[in-house]
Length: 299
Length: 279
Picture (cartoon, each protein chain N blue to C red):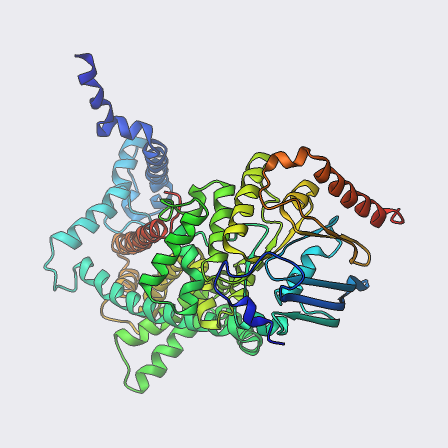
């Protein structure tokens, strides 16, 4: 009955060893160790560190400061946990509440931006005039620093009574239409000559060529673009919260943290933003895998 | 010029006999010049050809002789610079707009995101046929090319030969009376190619279609054709047209017979003559 023991090999510990989990965890541990190590030199100049002797004692103090230059990882994670789970959800001190405020404008801006990006790409692929007249402006639009443009847009929209969610979403959309347009123009023009000739032998109209050839051929390009777009939509939403001194959102949290020297709060907000971006990109990755499978991709 | 009527008759109705059959393709003094940066290139020059309903015509010649270009002119994928060409009595453009031919490319050119059945249904979707009819036709033509049961597979799951058979089913499924094939078996190995040659011959006999077939293989051309058009490069032109009637009931064994070898020899002579002043 020794065969009975075999299925045990596929326990989660065994799978951990077989997969890529080990290298990933090793890199993570390395980064954390480095972070703990540099906490001391980064915080050495603070008044609280004066008179503390011995390396062990100095590290012990450097890892537990109230307003450090660089907080230790456990401080950031502790702050993240407290501000999400130990504060009422409706309270302005709850990080999940701020994350939701930023997420909602990120998603709205993402939808605006992606739709606009698709529309532009369709126009550019089907009209040489649009290609020549729009492309330079599309590229120029992205060379302007978003930090310079965001306040102008927020203030201008505020003066006509548009405040809150929509102006932030517009900043997100402004950033994230770009990779969608560039990716889709490439994708729509990716079908090889033979596939296009085939359509010609059927006397297929532009609509049929678009929906039966160009669009499906562009799907892999679209998903690559969407991953870039969703993460910069988040950046756009955070940046849009900075200039107005917004009351809520991860950007507002970063700003108030820097006003009051609350470095732990800043880092916790940064972590929350990174986590949010990872989840969004992960969701798009999952949608990509489902779509690929439906389109006959090799699993 | 009501030749087109004969062509749109139901499959199988058109006799294989020459002589009295209607002219499907008529080409007179056709020329095609590509303007390139290094000056004009004469891809085709002084081409005269007549192809009748039910014939199996092969274009053979070395690369650069314009055989694929000539096929693309018939299909209106390229436009002639001079001369006259009629397809079913129409201009190639009108014939294309009326979807009067099926085209098989050098590669299967299946859309990778569609399964085999939906690839075959592609032209039917574009022509706006209802779903049940599309499904029925796809099944019928997949069966005809011996791919019944493979409809739900995706192209990458099939061998090269099976993919090319699927692309033939796709070209046949809207029942065009003219089939244009551009080196369809060129990328396949000898054994698969032999098998597909036999199947194509059977399919041609069964459906009575007119087939124009581009190849660079002499045995393939002699085995399949009722007429072999030997072409030569610089400028691309026709140097010999060989009638080739090896009887309806031929199998691959026919390649050992004196009649077969005689025709193959004449093709080879033609190809050699076209090359003689080359180097």
